[in-house]
Image (cartoon, rainbow, N blue to C red; front, side):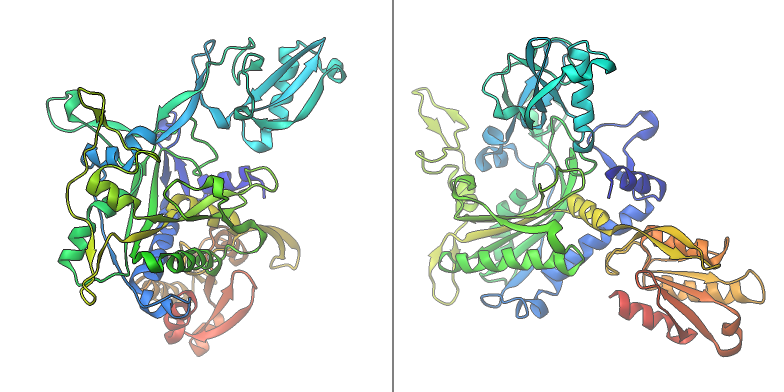
Amino acid sequence: MEMEKLVSLCKRRGFLFQSSEIYGGINGFWDYGPLGVELKRNIKAAWWKDMVTAHDELEAANGAPSTHEMTGLDCTIIMHPQVWKCSGHFDLFCDLMVDCKETNKRYRFDQVRGRWAAAKGKRIFVTTVAEIDEEEAELTRRAMKAFKLRAKDADQLTWDGEAVSLDTLDDTSEVLAPDAKEVGTLTDPREFNLMFKTIVGAMGTEEDASFLRPETAQGIFVNFKNVVDSTRVKIPFGIAQIGKSFRNEITPRNFTFRSREFEQMEIEFFCHPDTSADWYKYWRDRRFAWYQELGLAGQRLQLRDHEPDELSHYSTGTADIEYAFPFLPAGEYGELEGIAHRGDFDLRSHMEGKLDPNSCPLEVERNEKGKPKYKGSGRDLTYRDPVSNEKFTPHVIEPSAGADRATLAFLCEAYTEDEQPDEKGEMQSRVVMKFHPRIAPIKAAVFPLVKKDGMPEIAKDIYRALKKEFPAFYDEGGAVGRRYRRQDEVGTPYCITVDGETLTNQTVTIRDRDTLEQWRVKIDDVVEEISGRVS
């Protein structure tokens, strides 16, 4: 599937729009249209039901180490600045960036890619930030221009090696920056903090500075004691949250995959240190199975355990659920969700504001003698078991998913092109979005075969009955075949047609989007029939 076709469909059919498009748009921000908001809402609802409200009926089937409880939170986007200092984001939440001294443009170091090119006795590293499917053509175009070669002289241009990321080079002095005319205009890479800074209050001084949250997890950690004290949950238990996060990405790219404003679906699961390894395995496998259950299957989805040198200093295990997005090079995968065994790092950080100085000190300032000062909350975030009376700092397992990345993956997986016969039996090309019925934006569409003989009135009654249960669509314009194809293109799993037979025996035709199978159902049974198939 070509990514351009999906992006075009998303705009044309109302899944996704560029934010502020009438003003030229703003990079890294996207609006969900009428169909997109339903798709994303359904994904979030499925996640919340399966992970939180229905966990009791699902835990045994998925091999949970023991019974557990789940609850939820909705925390603020702006929090006390000290939260981000003690969590490490203030000091450590950075990407490397480079600036071009010729064009004054800024790039994320690892997202600039290029190849060594040679011609006329010179050799330079030509770079681009183009999408992968345009990379080869763009590198060729830039190399030809840099060496002042005409099309007839293209055979003078030679390449050395495949395209690689700029961060694999030791020296940038021979690099032609993505938009530059001269070689060697890039600065040395330096750190760039990804948090959006803002001001709280009317004074507007530096002391009033705060940040938009770069993740939803910290709101859960700082409320751990509140949840324990205000509810009857006992360890092991999880706290879930769905909410917006913000990261000032240097070069947002690949449609909604890397955005500056995005939505997360996160769980912080608190357990006893002795059982944390088992819980980590449970959540790793459970989350991978969830994507498969909703239609992400086959070789495009993989579960990858991190190698020891990839792990954070506090983690004893991390796995990524990854999907082979079409905009990535063949054989490469992009992260959908990370499942991390975080030990007691987070609760301990917010209690004490410090870690082992030999591993990763969270220094926020130094005293007059140059020694680090740590500013934790000072609150006791340990847990006392009500049965054994044991007191301990819980370990945390964190399944952290991106709602936008999941939505993009389901869009990519659903996009299908095939050929089907029309009313005359002639083969016609068809675009169909094969969403799992649980997440499809529209569950059913209702058509009267013709706009007479009382068919529209019956169809509208069925439509109104369906609308009470889930999103449905009514369409009486054009040939039925065209109406079918319009619904196929937006992923509607079932189409219901009121025809001449309906007038005699009170039955309608239901058509399956994927198999094209058709069967008849009594009007009074339509809502129950569709509800059972999409639930």
